[in-house]
Length: 128
Image 1 (cartoon, helix red, strand yellow):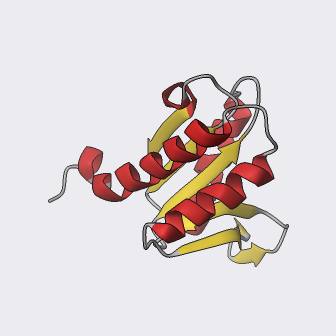
Image 2: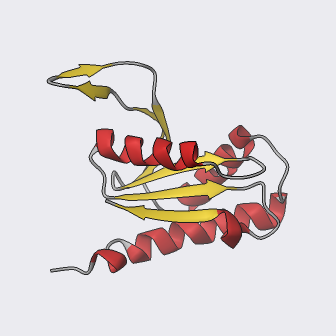
């Protein structure tokens, strides 16, 4: 059995490397959409399969409701990436990515806030 802390660690490492490259070149202070565009470019350049703005239905009891929720980037149909460009990450941001992971039935998620001086201070990994 794979240790959960290491599941997809190579893939998450590539994603984080791409995010660091984007942050290194752009720095903080831009809109989330700019970071999404540039990170998507870097991920594709790394040969990764991505889906942007992936629709995620809300599951309520036995029905799926299209309420307009979208995962910013889904990598290799395994890792949910939620991007932010905010002063500080709030509990609602964590709740958001955990909800997306639950509804999309994905085990790994990365919450990346680009509005920080050092990107490592804006990265959080979630495992369900």
